[in-house]
Image 1 (cartoon, rainbow, N blue to C red):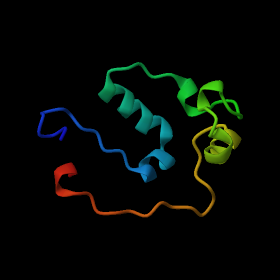
Image 2: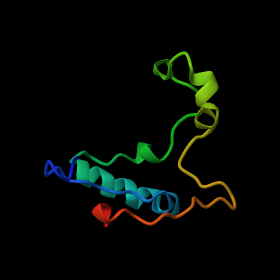
Image 3: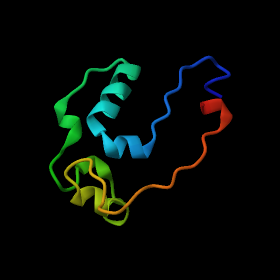
Length: 86
């Protein structure tokens, strides 16, 4: 739908984000036309009021995290990109 409307698209591979979060986030910011902030790489653990009533059920690992990091030994599966995204 976006490509048919002529809207620009940016595909981000989770492996790229995990391997070099800063470079990937900088590329995403440039694409979106927003400024880069070092705070995008880390955050305080815990929930936020805007997480909503389901946060305790959905966001356990998010609330325990404090930054972008790959779990040891974990590598997301790599799927072939649809032709429209190549």
